[in-house]
Image (tube, rainbow, N blue to C red; front, side, top):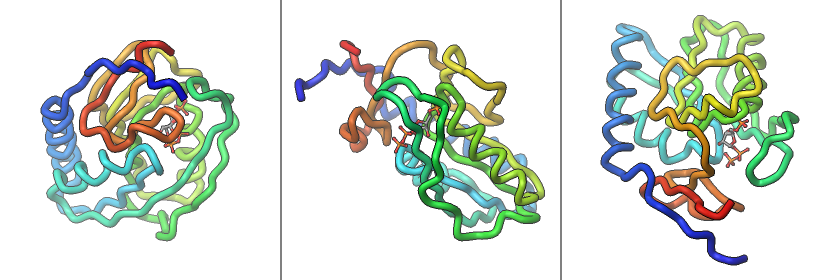
Length: 175
Ligand code: PRP
């Protein structure tokens, strides 16, 4: 595979500042409560790890794995759940943690599945919100960074499974 050219877009300091803000906002919204944080694998793993440490109210954590069919850069809208939660959602305050909301198909699928399990409340936190690409009506409750166009990698986000380990977020130039 030819190496794509990467341009630094969101450096680690910016990401850390947004994560700290999101942690504060979430903590303020659930005083005296315990939150079930649901990480969507794989992309959210770094964001999730940082966010959970920025939240000061009690939390429990669990993970789901969703996969959407389509090309590298475009979702088909068909989303499969490959790994379900292990904890019960019923009666809990649940926050879904995503690295990026793009078309919104992944989040829509998960959101409606979890809603059927009767949580006390259900909210969504995403590090990156690509609103211009949305195909469904779904807004995240907590947004780190809103961006327009462009394919990004790093801090959990991949291109063909690579670059997830980069500590900063980069724009892939030639896609
Ligand atoms: C990415 C990302 C989101 C989803 C967003 O996951 O982590 O879950 O796409 O796209 P959408 O809003 O168009 O549905 P992906 O399916 O690439 O798997 P990954 O998390 O393992 O990289």
